[in-house]
Length: 443
Image (cartoon, rainbow, N blue to C red; front, side, top):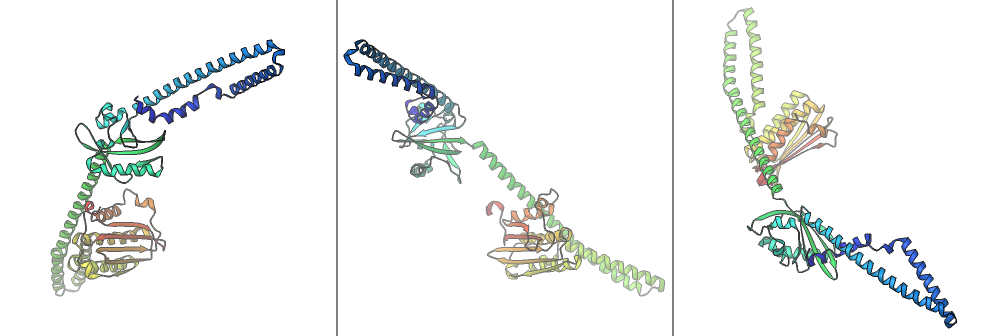
């Protein structure tokens, strides 16, 4: 380890020496030394008082003092030697730990020149230690970040905080020395003052592989969301086509058949006339079922009259079928009419799905809904007085209706919230831009 490294590790060595240092820190050794010093002082006092009357005592004291001084010098020298040995051993252990660390460790002085550069740092930055020591830290940082980084280090030194994580919000970038390649890192910084000098130590990790995996995951999510949106669009187009065929072609055929049956019925005798009446009633039910199926697939008024009228019709139809009162307030019809087709479809399906869930699961008596356009967004809220939805119901694998609703709204750059309502039931809130936005653009 270099001399500069030793300066940085001095404080750690001292703490280690305090824990494992002099034997005279032991209570028994301290007591024995105190007793010996006390006895020697007492002997010197007696010899001083007796003076020349007891030359043998005076000579013995002189000899004892010489021996005590020699022993003291020997013990002091031994303690210094043992302390140095232990300090060197501690330094060697600490140096081995620093060099064997899997994370890069770099220490700079107040001038931000490198004074410690471990083995992991050599591998990460692809720079030999001997070429790194004594050089500015900014050589490891991309050019566009150097000025700001220098200021951040100085600001951190002024705060007095001993350590903190670097780049809590943004990704940090470093520079490989052999190729000039930039790569992402995460790092923490600490500072220590030693003999009036300040040192900053940065522990950092190369997160290139992790960031690549995160980017790949985000891209995969975007691709899946886009694929889901395309599937939903294709589904809506197919529903629209089938609804048109049911309404136009099959509806017209059934209407023509009904007219023919009425003509035939007028010319049949009594028994056959009654049977024809039964057939006419059945045909009326068939026409009504065809219209209902067509409306469920794709209400033509959504395309012809717009989202506002389609939402009103949906609420009225729900009330008549389920017996649950549904009160809907619609405002901003002109602004709602400017919504894109995909947004109108997504909001309509959200209204439809929420009403379906109320009818199936809520056991509610009344539902309240609002639909409006404000600040360039379509805003829809639905609330009921039923039993409410539990958090575990939202996570069920078979809750495809809610998941499909969330995918539609999220893909268009909107948001959806499902929570408990003040009346005890469930509250659904949907916000989506009038013209929609892809997920990556909305973020």
